[in-house]
Amino acid sequence: MAASRWRLAVRCDDLVDLGIGQPDDSLLPRELLGELAAAALAKSTSSRLQYAPEEGAESLREALADFLTLHYGRLVKADELVMTSGASHALDLVLAWYTRPGDAVAVEAPTYFLGLHVLRQRGVRLVPVPVDEHGIDADRLEEVLQRHHPRLLYLIPTFQNPTGMTLTSERRARVAALSAEYGCIVVADEVYQLTASPDRVPETMRAHAGGNVMSLGSFSKILAPGIRLGWIECAASCVQTLRKDGVLRSGGGVSPMTGIIIESALRNGVQEQLLSAFRAAYDRRRRHALDSLDRLLPVEISYRRPAGGYYVWLQLPSSLDMRAVHAEAARHGVGFRPGPLFSIDGSFEDCLRLCFAYYDEDRLAVGIGRLTDILRSRLSA
Ligand SMILES: Cc1ncc(COP(=O)(O)O)c(C=O)c1O
Image 1 (tube, rainbow, N blue to C red):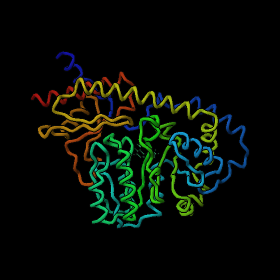
Image 2 (cartoon, rainbow, N blue to C red):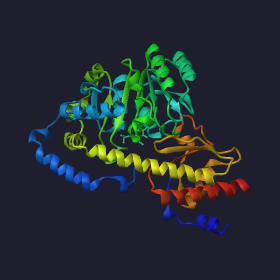
Image 3 (tube, rainbow, N blue to C red):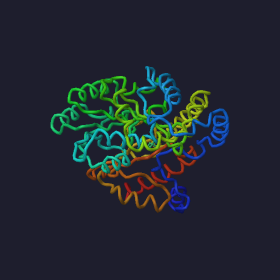
Image 4 (cartoon, rainbow, N blue to C red):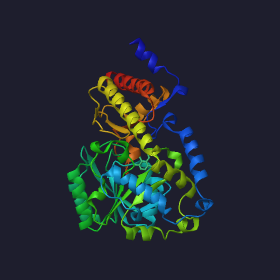
């Protein structure tokens, strides 16, 4: 009892914000990247510092294609890759070229909140499709395809943000087939695909391609968000469309210099080594967070165990007011992302997202301890 009172009295400048969805500084390989950058630039030619082709330097795309072929367990072709400034830019680029304002776009409910900002910025009409423990509900998707004829489906199939759920292989095949049948482009945001070893994740959505699946990937979760490099894997004909983009043309692709460094990391085993380190850290943190939640979370609060990724999604009983919990949590030094943030219509009032990837085990224990204390005391009030 005394310990729990003490935890509730912690000051806010000691905040553990379980809302933050990114790798923490201790995981970011600053020194290694410094050495790698110096060596890669020393070996490179000055012409590599010129404007690059719109879709990215061929040697970079070849190195990435080899890396993805190894990790995805299927052939990825360099001429089916466009380098982007991360997955966020990739989404915007696809929207710019494949949608018009007013077009219907189907999204998971709930979905990645900043993805919603990108979508809204392009003026598309968002249509929600529910997600359950196996990922997007394919029957409901079919209804939406029939009724709204969405131009595009924005989907996070692996370790979904925010629910942490992964679309089963069977549903992946159905989603791809349905989308092809109704002429809907699938934009699979697969930024968490590489955060777990291949034996723990289903195949990427493009394993089911017709030409209508575009896969977005990023170095943000496996190297560093500040690298600002990602990619779109899509049909070669789509690469030819996307490379007409005015910004890519005028700017000579995205960040050719970063591309030199990343190409070297892909070729000399550094990215491979970092991938193992990231996976091990994410896994330790996830197991620790789930063990703590199992022990400390009141039985009235339910959640599904994610098999990887960054997030766990909690559902509160109707007797708890999530907004009041959020305000109290902030006063007592713990943060989370409220459910409505991830919805297009303010729903998920009774849900919240925790991220377990940002803090080490000790800080996770502090944050989860504070939050579960608050939930327990409110439930018993
Ligand atoms: C589903 C999803 N897509 C995209 C991003 C952003 O990726 P990037 O840094 O490559 O723009 C995130 C980051 O949290 C994410 O969760």
